[in-house]
Image (cartoon, rainbow, N blue to C red; front, side):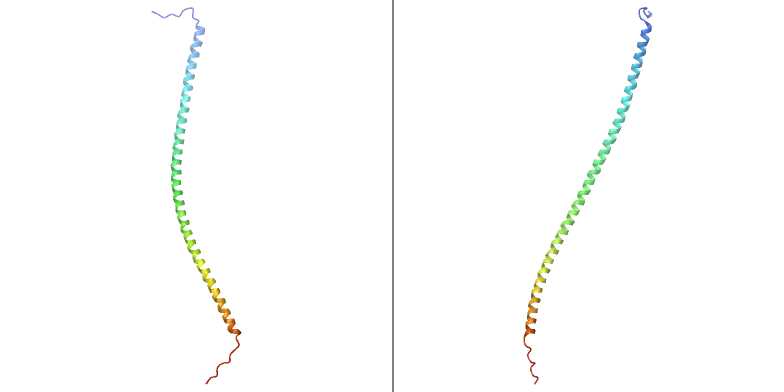
Length: 128
């Protein structure tokens, strides 16, 4: 049985419809492949950024640990310096007290010397 085209179908309208459908299908396939290509590029970019962010997070955590160790070390040095400063302050206070006592003793000695200088001179004992 042979297929025959009915005389009622106008080939002038059928051919443009078929061409239109083929063109639309080809355009849809081309568009879908372009979208898929864009999606692949986006996926690669997202993975690269995710990897970069993870590396930066790891590097940031490592840097935070290093900074924490440095802060702890500096705090220890500050505590040592504070203790040293307190010792020095105590010694300065002791020296200041000693200087005050020496000044008081020096003042007393000077007063005694002045009193001795103000006493009338005694004649020297005669040598026998």
